[in-house]
Image (spheres, rainbow, N blue to C red):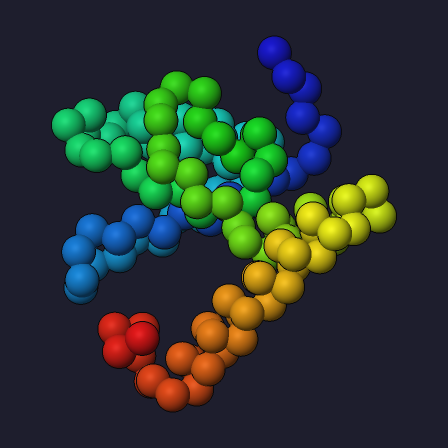
Length: 118
């Protein structure tokens, strides 16, 4: 058993359909993966795996079921920035490519009001 020394916060947004969303917030000694595991116990097992967006920390993953992991792009970029000293050319390529993605995203947000239009 892991002994957790701090208080953890987990936020989960569940999108049921276009008009219904559920926001769950957990504060306590359980980390995100443990909170997701507890929700899995009451989830319809016939449903497709949920999409989970988070940073890539192992404690954010469930140990009991599979999710479609969509790790945070900002945290991923930070990893390349941290590794740039050791792999400058490779990391520069990734960071510059991500910069183009961020520029395109900003442009689409300024030109279109809703995410549906984008």
